[in-house]
Image (cartoon, rainbow, N blue to C red; front, side):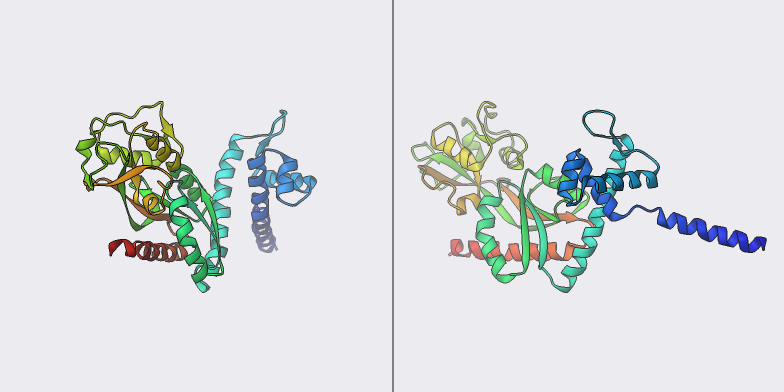
Length: 324
């Protein structure tokens, strides 16, 4: 009898341990609460009542044996345990979403939801020309786009808020898979009455006395242009910076300086309505690479590779007339 009692007791302990695991729904509710730091707003975003959300968070805290939220002040604050749980919960929810979407994508490539992040120096120039062809070829693809700086997209990709990111290289993408879709050369933009305006090609050394206008800090295009010039142009005036290429082009058109413009922006007529002259830069470093990055071992890897191949082919086709 003793043996039987111990056996039943052990089984009960195992069953209890299994029951005490958090559910994905509880983790989703906690992640929503961590985002809004408000029970009412989190409940509204989760389409449940505030009492249901509160009870679910209490159950999660009981299972984990710790408080996740400090409720003592006027404003909710995550505890140290809550911050750690949020990080792990986000990873679990990301993997669960990857599992569902990944299985679907293996049976039907480039169908359903795909969340793509794109940097500002690419999205307005490349996507309007690529998206119609992608929609025609893959009508069941639901492409959700998010424009942001590279560092923010990398963080979103790591946390599972997007599935892939279209960025420019070089950039540190350690921990991700990357694939190139094409090169993006730089062109010099100067006013049409500039001494260099009559040239068809110019070297970086010829620009040593010029004022170089750049995007503000945080834009990787700024770093790529600085890398291309390698310190051979006068340091930029920190009082004159732009948040977009369109603004940068307008500054050059108003004789505030010169700048380097990527090829995809040139092909999208970013200088339309200005009196600027675009000159090819004779320097192998005056370029950047465009490509996709995605998480290692992601269930979206198949879709990311296929999307990369499609973009590579579309970019080549768009530039084909320019080669004739």
